[in-house]
Length: 329
Ligand SMILES: CCCC(=O)SCCNC(=O)CCNC(=O)[C@H](O)C(C)(C)COP(=O)(O)OP(=O)(O)OC[C@H]1O[C@@H](n2cnc3c(N)ncnc32)[C@H](O)[C@@H]1OP(=O)(O)O
Image (tube, rainbow, N blue to C red):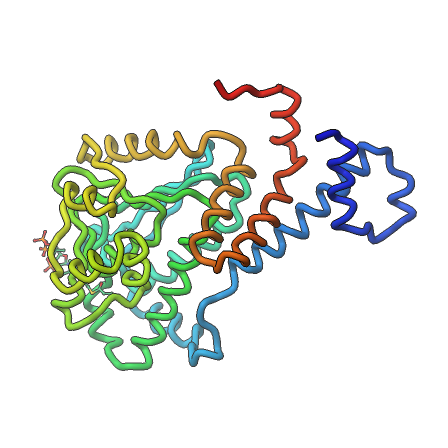
């Protein structure tokens, strides 16, 4: 594809708003102007789609009310470190309660997801727990205190909104499961693209024993990961899934050799980096087309793929590759 035909492709999609500016540009400046314009328009549309919340006021969801309630159950933190490699490390930190989610941790998770949505250089994400264990679900003290129906529904919608946004991040994500991922912790693992487990760890949907079903979107996502038969077994049996069984079910991508915090994180980073090598714009585009294919009906997914394609076609990485005359031997 020549330079001329790249700009022709873009011209047919965009009319510049100010013709006088347009006429004064050189062909190269014009191509850059059009490419930037198309990129921004398409990115804006994709971002808007991604941020569209699953629940809003139309669903009797009162976000402000539940945020005030969650604020009352304080403790622990959700920390994000953004590394130069484009890999983010999100750590659940509430060692006193085996990293159970307090109310303020739910609020912090939402803030961190917003931060990740705005991370232009991001490519990958590893979610892990502090102190060699993943997460023991919702803080049972908070669960008890908000056991009325309105609070329960609002908390459920709050967490579904957050975990859906997490799942749709344009970053390739891994849940690094050390120790235990129980209840809501098991649900959180399903909002990641991949799960890696350390020796001796377990994922366990304990909800049945609590007289519950998953409410953070874990059942819907689990069915899509392991199929409805295995999902039914995991939810109705409420048995722990060890690394070997998880691998067999397709719930886990692999078992790491190290079970200590630093070693397993290093291994997870190395595993992820084989998929995050390359420019952030391209890695993010890859995740977006896969998210569309996973979530949308075929025709809508194809249209999104076309939009995302438009953001990389003729873009810097594409032009560099063409100039390099890249061979794939
Ligand atoms: C829609 C969301 C659904 C949900 O997530 S419901 C919550 C599901 N999770 C649970 O029921 C976990 C209950 N806890 C357990 O089974 C065990 O504590 C667990 C995690 C296997 C750890 O066992 P151990 O290693 O023997 O340690 P331990 O029991 O002494 O726990 C250490 C301290 O942590 C506390 N803890 C663990 N998970 C918690 C939770 N989710 N909420 C509140 N507190 C929790 C536990 O009570 C103990 O505290 P303490 O020493 O008794 O003061």
